[in-house]
Every structure is written in structure tokens, then in C-alpha cells.
Image (cartoon, rainbow, N blue to C red; front, side, top):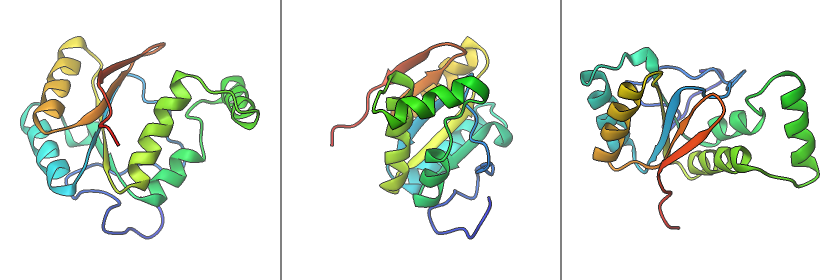
Length: 154
């Protein structure tokens, strides 16, 4: 991680996040857990369930939320068009979903991202996330976002 780390920047079992890019999470499952103990248990379950630590990233806190806010996750013309849309107040599903994860990190919840390039790995990761109380679980395909578990009610 870049910069000083705080108590909620990352769980010890997770991989480091690259604050410079935050690329669009193609073929990744993202979910939110509400506390560090659950995040730690989830990472342990994922690694014992066949996922490599390098395939699992956990982030929380304002620094991570700011880093996510600073990028669209897209490059080139797509990134420019998204920034333009943000400036004029136009949103789409992708932008709204990104905002949910940013907000979760600002609220000191933990966003867990798992690489899952196959249907089998997506199903396994989704099962583990659900078993550990994750909400706001979405799968980011190449051209689609599949919402698997709804956000918790405020």
C-alpha cells in the first residue's frame, strides 16, 4: 500500500492494493463485510477453499475510498467519458455500484475482491462470501455486472 497505513487499511491476510490504478475488476467478485474479524475469517476461508492470497484483496478506510474515487477504473476514451458524465451528473449502473463500494470503505466496512475467472470459481467465492455474512456482492464480467447479494439496508 502506498502512504501510511491505518488500522483499517487492510487485513494482514490480504494482498496489497495498488492505489495508483484501481483497474476495472473484470472477472472479480466484490463483497462487503462489516467488521475486520469477518474479513479475516473470510480471507482464511477463501485461501483454504482454493484461492491464492494474491487473488484476494481487502480494503477499507478513507484512504482506499479516496483512491477508488480518484479513478474510473477505465482508461482512454471510456475513462474520459465517465469523468464527463460524473461532472454533468449522469450516472449508470457501473458508477452507482462503484459508489456503493467507496461508501462502504468510508464507513470502515471491508470490501473484499476475489479473482474468479471461471463459473466454478465465481460460484465457490460467492458461497464463501455468503457464508461469512457478506453483502453488496457483485460479479464484474467483461461487459456486465451481476448483483448476487443485495446491499444491507441502511
